[in-house]
Image (tube, rainbow, N blue to C red; front, side, top):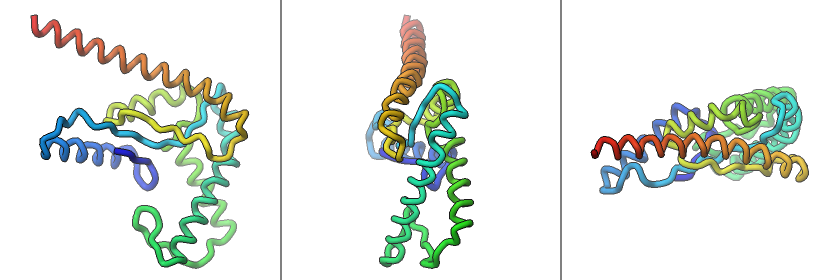
Length: 182
């Protein structure tokens, strides 16, 4: 299952993952198998405020371009993401900037891996708790290539910290199951 946090929060995502696992079980499949991959925009650095200032402008412009694509779909008679209909009227520039500011803050706080390894680890653990198996990091939202590559080192530190936790928990569970069998 490939999913995202566009138009949904973690609680809604958890409900959908649960429904996915239940549907697997209802159709004769092991509910614990099947990979849930979550796409998240990602940029990890050393300092939270520095990361926020580095990603703000490129990510807002990325969001602006996404809104333009949605508007073109609506003008062509289509439906925008999530099945919502969009008015063909132009959004006033000051409203667009306010919308982009709000969207950026939401993504930065609750819907992306933007920050430091330390600031993102609880978010990753929460995603793991609700059943996300892997995170597909979307790193192409407008940062210069050099910055993206530098951020990969910090993203790897986050991956390592979370993988160690998961591996440790899996090992502990396996030991407990083995001990119970004795």
